[in-house]
Image (cartoon, rainbow, N blue to C red; front, side):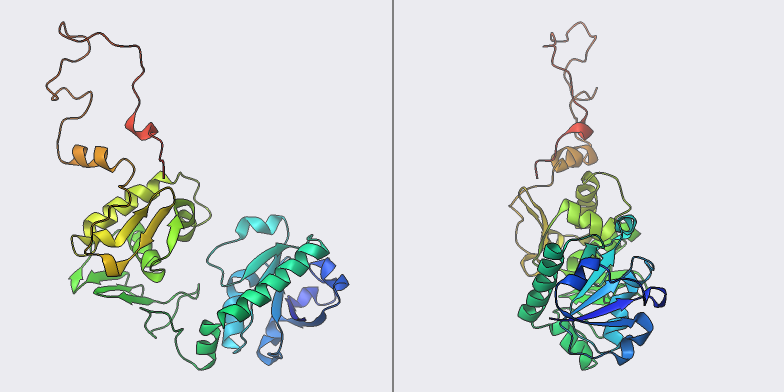
Length: 306
């Protein structure tokens, strides 16, 4: 296997990272990040040593694409560098510098084989100077994460250059997080995401709250999309959510949002349990029924089954 090993200039004479790469018998060409534009494009995999320079990791995908190179990218990190790993990096895989030969060999092989099986449609499009052949994307540029600045799916248009979205010409009044969530869904139509994956993709890896916030934002986003597109965000039982714009007009009967019934009844002004307007005797009144000793639960303590 031909390996293009990319490292900072300061690490040019240092041992390979991961060091076990030396014992696998592969053909390794070692270059610095500055030498990428003149690199041989025949390599099978790029291994990027970001142990000494973490700034390489988030930008290496853009640098390699700009050099018209098309190959999978594995970033090597130290234990401390793992805390910075992000799903927004345009890389194929990450690996620890301390990984053993068996793990390194397996990751190299899997990265190469998956890349070949996919046919690299994005890389081939980049080499022709065109936008990737992904449905709904316009050739209007990409942001620093390699994501398209404008996404169009059906009547929905999302423009990151102005942070605006409209549906059939109707502007959508979205918060920053709602906008990010909608763009995330629109970029990955028909793909099922868990709530944890959505948290990572939209909120980032520095968010430490629970997955309940995903359900809250999905519910708000559905309400703002209105009847034209609210059912496009499907809830997949025991998994998470799927964005299916082609079935927007159909009822979403797979699963209702956790806690949505309680939220809707509260928003509608309907009496809820414990409310003095519910028409039933309250605790402490002479007509109150005897309690059973079962403690009441706060609505926010309700478990999410999906």
